[in-house]
Image (cartoon, rainbow over the protein chains, first blue to last red):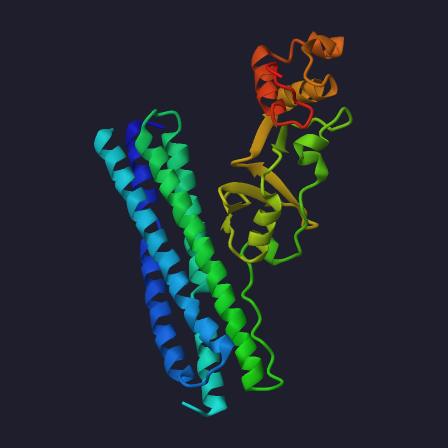
Length: 83
Length: 237
């Protein structure tokens, strides 16, 4: 594989990292949590409360995943600058 | 909102909308990107690609955790739904990508575990050995929860940085990754010899010790693996 091909592979692979998909999932989560909170307000169910409480840790994991993929893209950019 | 029917309808809509498939697809895409970067930059000596791969592994792991969290949300909502609307059937889990979603999966054959390798172990062109302490059971649980990325081009599941294949009956077999060592025929023969001789090179069967097909590099590789074996004794001890 010559350097032009290497660059092309790395650039494409970085562009295919699922940043947009995870951002969209974060928006879906936020939206669904709001719907749920509105529907469950005042129900007092422990399962309902636990389900609502579980949304934030999921969102936090996704934010960390997004940060990790951004860092990966940055590393790929560094590599492409260097070769 | 106090009408149980309306609340149940919202819960069902939320269950439908949870981005389970999107996250699984994201992990598959990230795994494929990692493979392409690794293949393209292998041996180039640059740190940046390695760092990129580490970040991608982190992203896959965090996404896997998010998937597990979605499973918890789904479980809680189904439990509440069952109370809210007696007799309602909980919504079934989403299908798992790859062959693990088509059949129950079972752990790798014992022959893959280092401490089970012995004289009778069959030597193949490629022999992946599982080092002690590798959380294969945890990997299988994660695959069953749908947290593994499926790499269709390689016909492998990627979970916790490890690649696994699935045989037709559903038996999982290890391929590569942390805690998994892939040995070629000669390296595996050398490992079997070391295990049989309990690490004592002077006690090796002469046919193996004098086998020209087993090179010094093969012995070195086998010795590195043998250091993880239960019978290994350091020269210092």
